[in-house]
Image (cartoon, rainbow over all chains, first blue to last red; front, side, top):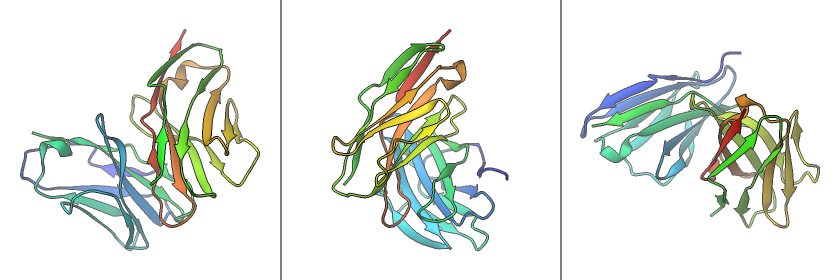
Length: 112
Length: 115
């Protein structure tokens, strides 16, 4: 089976812009979670989607949002980008909410 | 809220030797999952091992094994016969057995393998 894929792999934006990141889970996986990784804050949970519904959300401002489509693919959106949003954004998928998560390669976002 | 602490920012070991990475966690829950993930320079997070808190037996996966001490809230990872490919950041993570998927990660331990 193909693993979790994330597009794009690298992205450069300027402050104030918005960005959309995409994640395609492993075939058959219905849960998709997003994490932000920065040198200062480490790995932090953003949100989880299961069957197109957001099940849990981390402590991030409303500028961070996401959605999941009927084929389980997920997107996350960050509006009004700030310099501090520069990070590696990781997506993880699992069969269900009780199962082990498998991660994608990440999207490296740089905000200038 | 649950927290995970990895007190060793960096560790190094000679190739073929054994190394143990430490992890402690804090939770008021009795059932949960614990994980070790590895992140090599490619940045892809790779699952190393998983432990269910209700299982007393320590999980083992080839050269990787854990020492799970539930009362002490300790979850260390032992890597036997270290190989150059084991060099990576290692993250300990906690997940509640209830509710949605949310991994709480430790700060990570950078493992260097000396040839």
